[in-house]
Structures are given as structure tokens and as C-alpha cells.
Length: 161
Image (cartoon, rainbow, N blue to C red; front, side):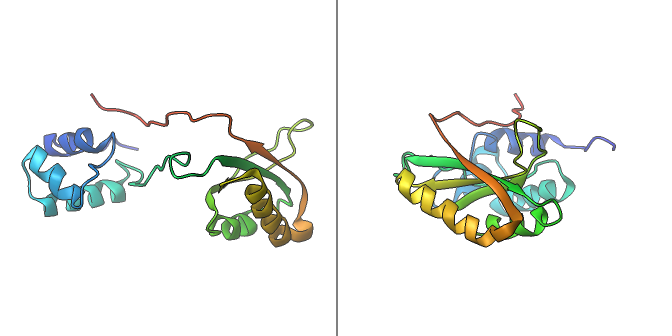
């Protein structure tokens, strides 16, 4: 794959947004003002960079603890391989799941191949959510567990300086 050609405006746009969009009513307009281009160009360039793979996504990264969600647990499931993609897609659409993905097992100590992050105000709430997933998975799930968060880790991606 050939490297992507980014011009100085693209690089300025990445630099201005890589730590997050401004928390204002019109964030793209604020970024546009900061780097000296029209807001429509900011949006067009970000769209283009998403489409060509220069950036992977523009998304929200909430602080669950600040929002009152104190019980955050990664539910892990041993799901039949021939159904894991289909069932993972369904679980990923549940409103209490922030992300869901497939991972390889590491036998004999780690039999789980489907992970779903659950957020609740209590462990009881997270356990109830896991029970909803258990019902959805039915006999396709052979085992499960919930691994609760012990703290918050700061998540950052690649930074251009």
C-alpha cells in the first residue's frame, strides 16, 4: 500500500483535532477558525481522510465514571465459532454495550472468543445485562465471565507533533 499524500492543511487539521474536537456547539467551525479555512472544507477534508483511511474514525470517548457508570465490566464469552460473527453483531447493537469484538482463544487457560464491554451504575445492573446477553446467545455460549474495571486508563492514538 502506497503512503497517503497529506498536504499541509490536512496535517494542520489532524494536529488540531487529534486530541479531540472542541466542546462547543459548532466544533468544526471552531477548528476551521483555528487553522484558517472554511468549516465546509474542514468537514470535506475529514470525510475524505475517513474514506481514504488516513484517519479511522471520529468518535466519542466518554468518561463513564463521570457519567455515573461505576460498574464497567468486560463480559467474555465462549461462543461457537460458526455463530460468533452473527451473534457478536447482534450483541454489538445492544444499547448497554459500548463495544463488542471477536478475539482468538488461548487454550487451555482462556476459552473466550467474544468480548462485550458493559456499563452500569452497579455490578447488579451489569450482571443483569450479561444475563440478557446469555439469553440472546442461548446454547451457542458454553462459558462466560465478567472482568470488572479497576480504574481508568487514558486512551490515546497516534499523535502527530
